[in-house]
Image (cartoon, rainbow, N blue to C red; front, top):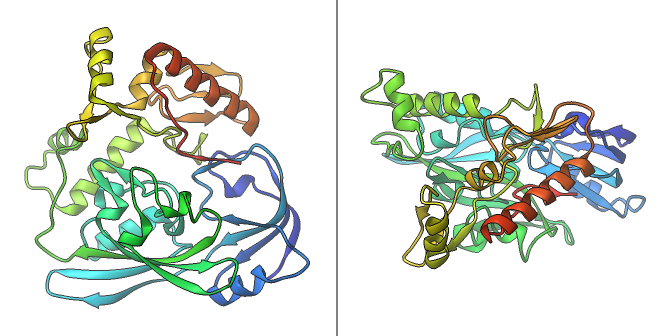
Length: 337
């Protein structure tokens, strides 16, 4: 374990933004993490996972702890289910592929989501009708104030749409070290009716899909709509899909008859933020080195040499414009730093 000084964070954030960590250390075990947290010479700490869900707008004047704890293991196996424990530093998509290689089902719809396992529960990642909470059992988290390990079950995490206890009342208090999932070994429940999965499977000439087929379909859809962070800097979906009242949705439909919406309950409807942003005229709009992706309006991109403050200003302009045109508030999904 070596503490480095004045380290560029460009390789550690998927936006590819240049920012400097005053101090930096890569932590590969819980014991090392506990040791680093009590170092007296570095009172300010900043926790860094996969760097996929943040927008850096300034240098980090603290000790950046890069959580690089690795390991995947089976901890409980029954006739049709298996509990898998994955360490926080595992790449999320590689973990999904590992599960699929072992024919463990439940995470296939979450293929190709950027980031690491440890940050996935914080915002309850989701895609194509599935959320992390659907297969979540528990997570082990280190309490920063005491250095002790606490286990959070699903109820304790207070999961909601792109939300959890770790973004609310426990924000900044814990570091997730591992996550345990319960997956299926056979009799997999496929979820292919959301979005374009069924159409993609038809294009692939697949009538009786496996979990591996669903994953391939999801990957194909995401690659057709979303830029690869290795080629164009981005953090995936920048905004959450807003949930509005049924009455507000009726008003929206009066003005825009083709406005899409997904019924959440008798009282609430989820409206695609990408549709709102595109309707507001931002899809594909470029502002020099940054802009909105041409295929997916939810994605803000760094074409190269952009800075975080410029992208933040664009995000705020989009929010103001959507609020003015539709009277709907859209919130950032990424963490603004």
